[in-house]
Structure formats: structure tokens, C-alpha cells
Length: 124
Image 1 (cartoon, rainbow, N blue to C red):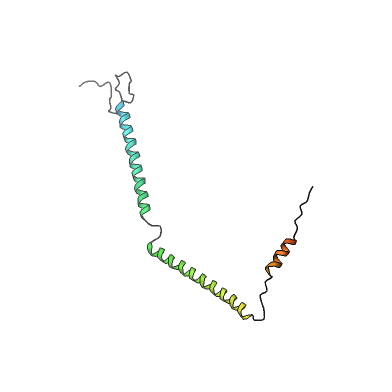
Image 2: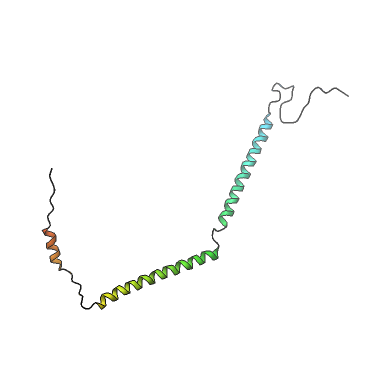
């Protein structure tokens, strides 16, 4: 057997007798860049897939959405009914008040009162 004076490992580095002793070779940098590219593409594909899955699953189930729409429609109808009741009550009060008359001033009186107004500006 021979005496072994050096140890060599395959690590994509230059051997001990090369001028750039144990420095990284071009193959090492190529392999490292390919690893980064694969990880980058895989990560982006997983992010896109997660986004597509999240977008395809609705935030509210269809049955809950229909129940909410039904409840909102009922609320609108009840509001309209309340407004109609208050309006008919007010109109009913106005129509039952026979002794009270609604008196509006004649338009010429309104115009004459507006023409009598004078605007003065303060001069300093």
C-alpha cells in the first residue's frame, strides 16, 4: 500500500495542485444558481396555486349568502312599511283637521317683502 498524503473530495472546487487551490469552480456556481432558480420558481408556483385556491373558495357559503339577502330584503320591506305608516298617519291628521286651514301668502307679498330688504356694506 501507498502512503496517502492528500485528501480529495468532490465539491466542485479546484484540487490542491491547481493555482486557485480549493476555490469554487464554474460548475459549482452554475449548480448553485440552478438550485436558486428552481427554489424561486417552486416558491412562486406554490404562491400562485395558494392564491388560486383561496380565490376559488368563497368567503361566504351560498346558503349563508342567500339567507343574508333574504334578511336584507325583509329589512327593506319593513322600513318601507314603517315609512308608509308614518306618512299615512301624517296625511290622515292633515285631512281630519277640518277647522284648520293651511294659509299661504300670495306671491306678490313675498316679492314685495324681498324688494324692501336693503343690503348695506360697511366701509372702513
